Image: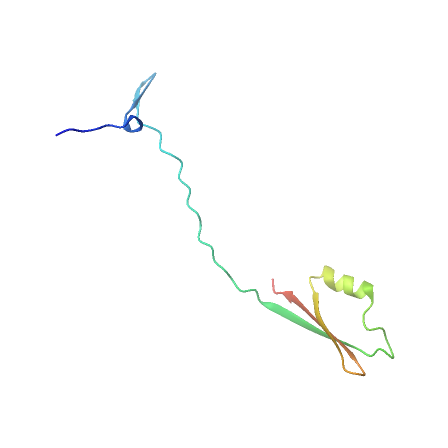
Amino acid sequence: MSHTLRLEDQAVPSAGGFEPPAQPPSHVQPPLVLVQPRWQYKHLVRLPVEEPAAEEAELNRLGAAGWELVNTLFDGRMVHLYLKREVQ
C-alpha cells in the first residue's frame, strides 16, 4: 500500500524538536437576524389662522429627538403633521 504525504501535512523542524503544521485561522460568520423596526407615531394639529403650521425651529427640535416628518395634510381648516420614530 502506498501513502502520499503532502508537504503541508508534514511536521516542521524547530529548535526544540518537531512541531505540527500550523492550522489556517478559522472564521465563523455569525448568523444575520433581521428584525422589523417598531415605530412610534406623533400627530400634530395646527390651525393656520391662529398659529403657523410648523416653525423650522420646532421641526428641528423634533428631528433632534428622532422624529421624522412623514406626511402633512391640509383639510381646508387645519394642518395635520404626521411624524414617526423608531422605538428604542
